[in-house]
Amino acid sequence: MARILAIDDEENIRDLIKRGLLGHEVTTAPDGPAGLAEAHRFAPDLILLDVTMPKMTGYEVCRQLRATPSLMTIPVIFLTARGTLDDKLEGFDAGADDYVPKPFDMRELEVRVHAVLRRAQPYASAETLQVGGLTLDVRSREASSDKNTCILTPTEFSLLDYMMRRPGEILPTYRLLEEVWDYPPGVGDPALVRMHIRNLREKLEENPSQPEFILTLGRQGYVIKKD
Image (cartoon, rainbow, N blue to C red):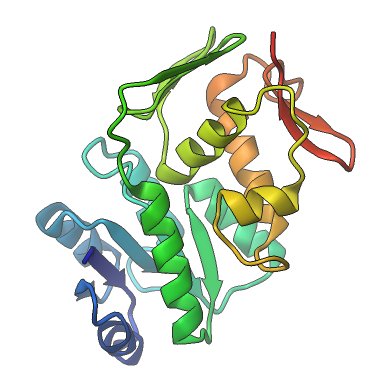
């Protein structure tokens, strides 16, 4: 059972989530400021976050979460009727782990929640991965390069961990969606992968527009450079 915080200004959506996720401990908040306060009090394992709300948008809430050390690693799923590509890109740029458009099927939401919670589980191993100029501590989720040392979000960690265990291997987007995001074949938005790759480059590459470590190979996929 996980602790889940749902932040949404629509009472019927908050009630639907509480009824639909009966196997978890769910608390809710009606707007961004109340949600941030509840996140500090409740210490959730996952946050479901609406985008269009009074007082603060979901994007603003997510950016504050990612800027707060005690909250920055909590995975976030956006729930919103704003489902254009630009909306999704803004959500991923703010630090979202996933994006579920409204109206949503409760069964699909349960699948997404399960997949995100699985990725957020801490590793018991004290293993450290080293590939070329990249280092990843799997217990602390701390990644480092010549440019920076940073704590990764759950999805950033899962993606980099998966890729660093397969150095030099070309990893197509569909494979990353199936094996990192745990989606069935044909499900999942390629923008999820693209934006998380971009975020990793921003954190770890000296020049993100000309990456040295996390490379894109045309229409084939992504690869971690061996050396």
